[in-house]
Length: 282
Image (tube, rainbow, N blue to C red; front, top):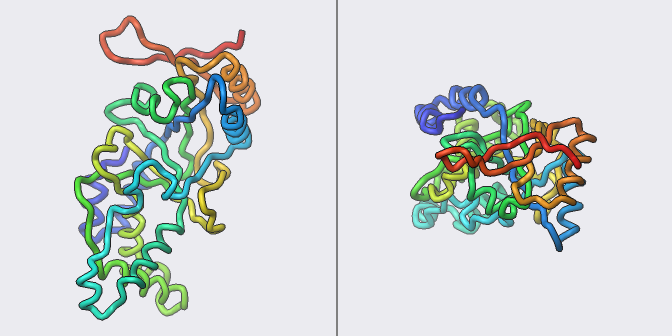
C-alpha cells in the first residue's frame, strides 16, 4: 500500500519520477466501492445500478457533484501576488477552472486500519444503511489511480498555475518535449491538487481514478472498467439488502462469473466486525 508521507517526501525532493514509480509499485491490489440499492421506491436507481455492473462500467463524477464542497479546492489563488506580477487574477481563475473541469472522478476505498467491509460509516453513507452493496475491484493497471492525501490546511498559490500553463502550452506547440522535467513537476503538483481533502474524510481511506473529461460532460458519465484499469472481482450484499435486490444481483453475478457474498454481523466476536458468506439463491 502507498504510504502518503513517503510519496509526498519523494516528490518534495524533486524526485517526481521516483514518486510516480513508488505510487505505481505500491498501489493497492484491490479496491472497494459502495453502491446504494433501495427496498421500495427508486426502482430506476436499482435498474441503472444493475445495468452499470452488468455492462462492466462505473460512474465517473464531475467534481462539483460530489459531497465535499472542497473537492478540487485544496489550493486557492494568491491574488495580491498575481497582481503584483502583472498578471490577471481573472485569467488565472480561468486556468484553474479549466484544469478542474478536465477530469472526472471515480472514488474507491482501500484496505487500511479498517477494512472497507467493516467500515460502518461507509455502509451508512454510500450503501444506503446496509441496504445496498459493496463491489470489490481488482486493480489491473494503476496508471491513473491516486491516493488521497489528507491535510488540515489549504495552500495558496500564484506562480505554480502560471508556470504550468506556460509549460503545457509550450509542450503543445512542440517548443519543449512532453517529458520536460519542469513540466512533469508542475503536472504532478496540479494532479495532486485534485487528490487532497480535509483530514475529516480520512476514515474513507480513499483512492481515486482521474478520468480525462474529453467530452466535457456537465455531471458525469459511465465509463468502461477496462479503460480505467480495474475489473470486478466480487459483490458483497449489505446485511439488510432486500430479497428482490439479492436475487437480481445474484443473476448479475452469474452473468459476470464473479463471487457474491452476504454480509452480516459477526456475533461471536469481541470486535465490532462484519463477516460474509457465499450467497445462495433460495
